[in-house]
Image (cartoon, rainbow, N blue to C red; front, side, top):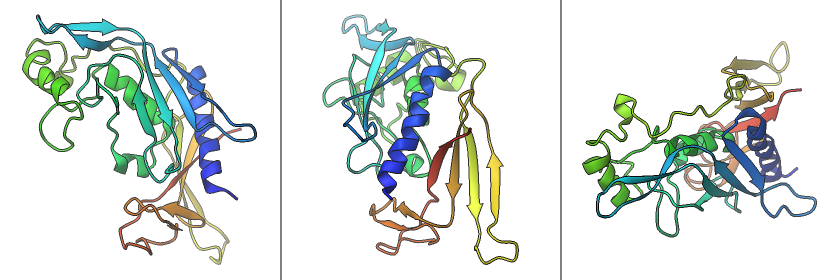
Length: 254
């Protein structure tokens, strides 16, 4: 049993399902090794976003085609996948210069975020539905873009998420699709009177029949603080003592 392989395989089903569930996102595996599962993806977003700023007028220039590389490196899934933006971009939480990193909340990732949800988050970042430009935690990754948003973009009415002003309003999912089913499965002791108990909390469904489950007993999960794999039945990490977040496993419904 290889927990990392299992997670990579389930994430592959989820992210590749986006090719059917959305008209505006395309996912392509990169350099898949024979007998293995994808660890790298190129994701293309077809939506309106800001690619650069005219240095004289400070007015934005827009693009309709944006690419990012997702790399599930050796730290995956205990850490957020490494992200590198491939096309020109202007956003407070994406670097417009090398190494062109993307800001992702690690606690959200360890709390159960999947690659499909990560793609939705980045899609909405391009649209300026999702951004943080204030000089408060979590601080902007691109200080120049953040300053432009605060001092020009928002005052000019180009974007303002608090007022519902975005540079693009295309939906992430098709009208016939939607977010993946989220099944929170909590298992109790196997020696209970009626055997193993499972509680399922259903939170949505997609056309491709992808689901997730969060399992509270059995197996291992990564510690968000030190990265050690410890038993899911523990409340705190046996290595560093940090509180544990329930891990999430994603499944495809037949």
